[in-house]
Length: 96
Image (cartoon, rainbow, N blue to C red; front, side, top):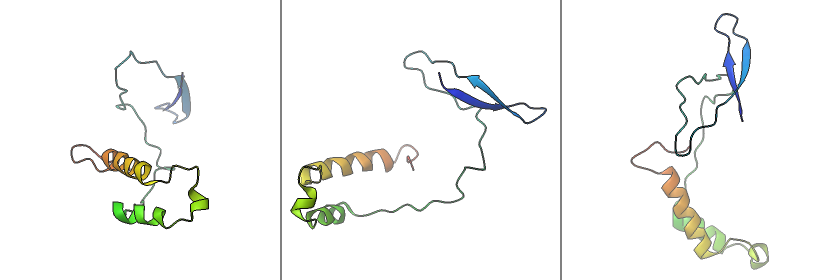
């Protein structure tokens, strides 16, 4: 079980409680979630590159640096596609 941060309404002090496990297939609810502004970023920097530029940079790496790694054309295209699917959704909020 995970620990969930909750705060006493009167004193504002933190109370730790065990989080209940959800039945299979049920999504968690964040209705009672308390946002911690001390760790919430005020801004972010999102870098974006064209797919072909990213692949081109990998092609330029020396062979001895990429030997035995996942830096090959097929793996790069697969990972870029997975990233774009997860982060560039037109129907839901991006993961970032």
